[in-house]
Image (tube, rainbow, N blue to C red; front, top):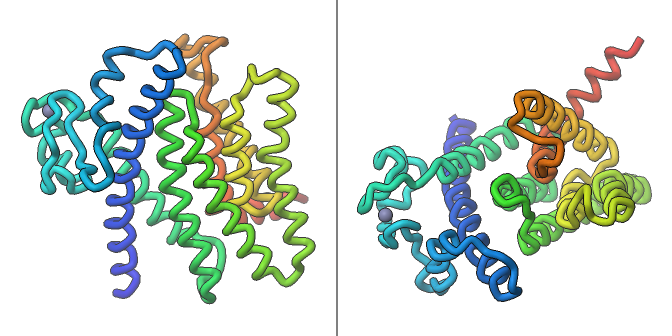
Length: 292
Ligand SMILES: [Zn+2]
């Protein structure tokens, strides 16, 4: 009974934070376009026109709007998932499609909350233990924003990257505080940073920024601090590359993706970390048992 209440709370808060993440993606994009235009970079005029109104809303009057007709969404249009379903994915006023990103990111964050609690590999006995799970869930909301943003626009916005790094620093500090062998914990975290951020840094310098962007290095640092373990960092990198191959090779064969196409690394690394933290110890045990 108590467990079902926890799961229900996780689903509902997950849907709400997913809705927040979806709205943040559009606001970040609007701000990005305005900044790019101010820097004299080429900007899609139609996209800027439809998103510009989002930059004008102040925090006190921060209501979501339809991107087509500027209809200000009422409270009953903002209920995660249910509003979208009841409207058939269309704006209440102009009936233009809202798109699938909103419901998918809401479901995604809710699923992330539920799976994180169900498969959390660490004990949940002390205050520090519970704080680490809460930090992980907060990081997940920021990572959901980065995930969607990188897939759509091949970019990892700085302020969200820094949010993940900030949450990661607190997580790493808690890991060190609660570790019985503190020097070892610090070496473990340093190894994690080298694997997930340092290697990308070397690739970045060698390729002069051609193979990967600097945003991936910052994301790698945030993920390394969240993993706080070189083993989990290694599984993250391995899983990200494996999933990358599974996705990229068929797309190359069918011609959907050209050799020169840009593949966003961010979403692959984020899924990699998710697999590593929630299934890493299981995978390591399975591997050790498989050895002769
Ligand atoms: Zn509309």
